[in-house]
Image (tube, rainbow, N blue to C red):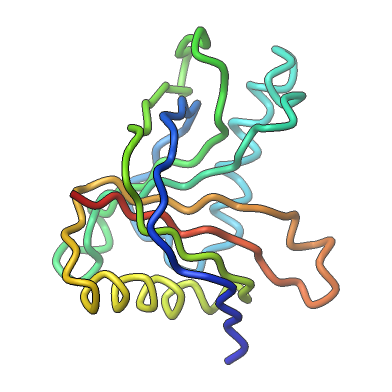
Length: 161
């Protein structure tokens, strides 16, 4: 495996507003599903000019522990950060990602290596005796199809108490 960890640290992250679409069911390793979900939100956001913000982030929020929640019931929310005054519409909902202290792991990985990266973040949390407090998300930093090796540059963020 070629997981590259650039850094795992504790950071104070600002509040973010996410325009998202929810998916319930299997998602692990399904790059086609993620592409479809992101495209749905993008098609909603582009005509509104919401994709023009240079600080916009593509994010997936995870809610369930795959070790304890059956795949058919696992929930994710996929979308883009938007301005404070953006309103929900049709299938697109708005979620506030809270400001707070997060363990942030920065990685350069292949699509098949997300599980390894998440394990690295949780090993760090365990080693430092930290307590996760619920909010967990990935923030994507590149377009993988433009990376010479097709890698994803991603931050994995886990809120801590």
